[in-house]
View 1: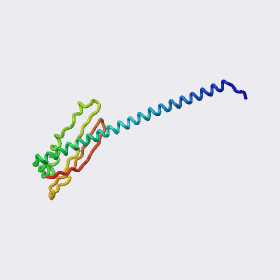
View 2: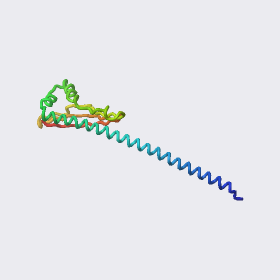
View 3: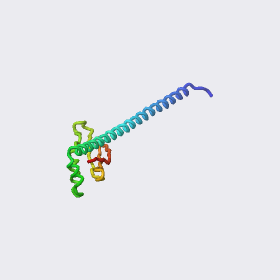
View 4: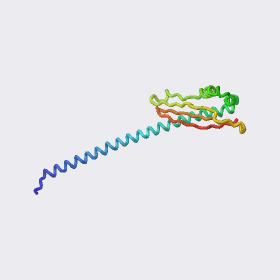
Length: 156
């Protein structure tokens, strides 16, 4: 068989084209994987921000409970001794002045807020003079939500 220089040239061109296709495939797959990891990172970051918004709402309601316990005993006593039919109204009045952070001034595309979804008396211990509240707070950040539910005890 006679060696033809043209066959070697064609073979080398084919190998170079296949090599270029592998390089292009590698670059495209890396950029796709990096965009997926960036999206996962952003989702994790937004979920964490929503969780911290819920935590800040929980801290706000705990601060209010501690303040009311120290300086306004009558409010806690009224919550405790109210009939069941009036408790929901008193609970809504108790949490309505919790400060919601302003979301319009922060960034235009990122809304942050929290809300108190549940606020109930879980247990009244007359022997130890403690009240246990069941509190559920939801934090929101740019469409992501995170909820925290806690039992908070205060002594009178």
